[in-house]
Image 1 (tube, rainbow, N blue to C red):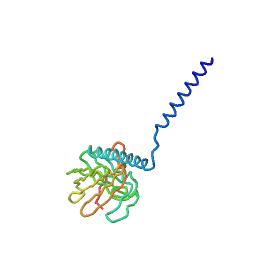
Image 2: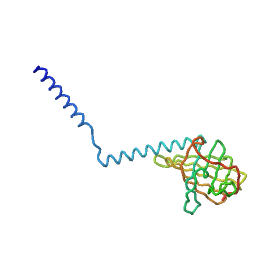
Image 3: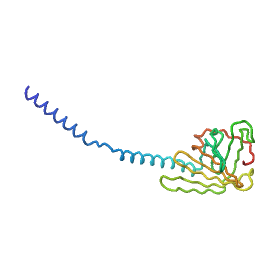
Image 4: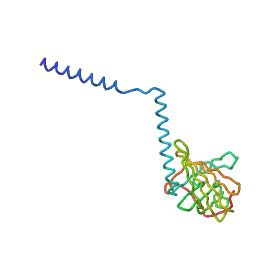
Length: 192
């Protein structure tokens, strides 16, 4: 019995020593290392989200749902993202904005443009920076060609629409056509 007890004590001692050594191998990160790791994680997430936006734009299955719109030199105002959007669907581009007042040329307090994409240029500015797209589109409701510049920053997007020296800025989030919730009007009107 005494041998059994000594053997059990030896086994317990070996297990305790092994557990203590295992605990010592776990390193604690210093504050600087922790901040560095968090920054690295944020950059990786940013790049993954940017790549998703890039894929949607290049597949021409992209909707920017604007949470804020504004003019060239104005302060952006908060708007309903279901009726303020830029949609790319194949070779078609739809720009819609409104104030949800029930008035306006599209019945939603604003205007809606449907057009065909004439030119499509895209560029990735590098790691940690934006993915930009410049799209020229033609619609019979505007004089000439309008230009849309879209910038994807992680899970957010910004766009500027240029036509006849006027500009309208959109800020919001993006999704695929299937995953977006937008209310598109069919009534068309003048730009700005």
